[in-house]
Length: 173
Image (cartoon, rainbow, N blue to C red):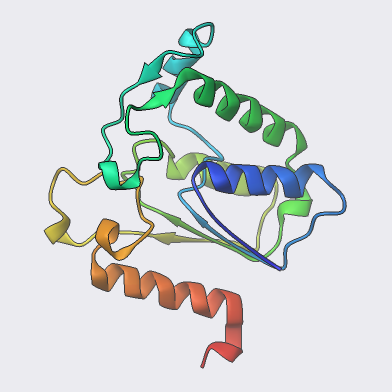
């Protein structure tokens, strides 16, 4: 059984794995997993008493579930899940895992993910640093690395080849 997830989905999937003895994955592929957050994201914590307040998003509308922005209630749920994950993280997470991350990600710091790997001795985790194609422009939103439109066609094809090799190993040939 494989887990493939993006951002908060990666956090939820790994929290489930870490905190439930009956949950197991053979291999995992994560795209910009919200397992560590940049300090600026914690500023939303100050607004936690106002769960219906909505923070406008700077992301392309094509990637937004809520076009108005993100409610503080969603940030509250993110923080609660992250704290729960941190309390339960351990060696059970050490399954073959491929993490795609753009070093310029606005939300997820690469150093934070590497710290998690080091603290829990997750030697089966591998990082794939995504460098979007230059044609994507300077206004590129770096957190979105989930399709050819967000990374560039050649970068996406390379990412999918790496995913196939990770999941299928020798069977990928």
